Length: 78
Length: 131
Image (tube, rainbow over all chains, first blue to last red; front, top):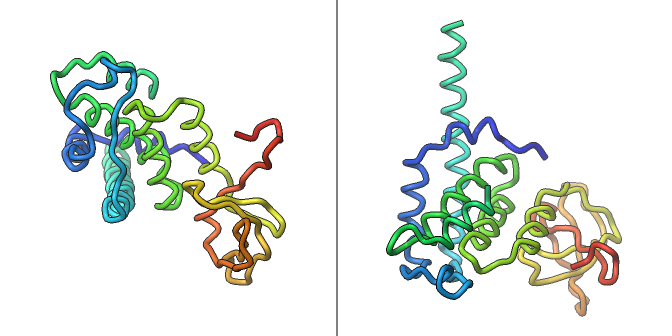
């Protein structure tokens, strides 16, 4: 299996910010890992797992679209 | 990179919500890097990475999960398998003409039909690389 480093280049801070907001309810706000050495992350519900599958698929499509667009743009320049 | 994200989480540069910040960065990076995996496997890889950075999964377990999910989905009759989350183990009985596999969970006589992407190879207990 090939690691898609090419798609990684098109991941933006905004993508990560939105995903962090969506999963914030599964984390405790306190810095448990730094105080106790063990962090906290509650289990995902079935609905949340389905949402994550949909999110990862949508993200892949978005990154592939961005890669195609940037390829087209750089193709025109050269 | 993942070790660094976990270190950042441990250092807790923010007053609150360090966990979701750094775990999400890792999970989204994993989703992008493992884009070629089928959606179910990709979700599990992202989840394992997020759990490691969140500090609830050790490095060895995370690496084992990611490696097993990255393996080929070509399964053969007689091969030992387990579900993606490791909740059930069993053996492949046969591969159907449509590509799906028929497998039997341990301790059961039932025959289950599954997509090969939803099962991973389970190493026998006692083998050098068994966990």
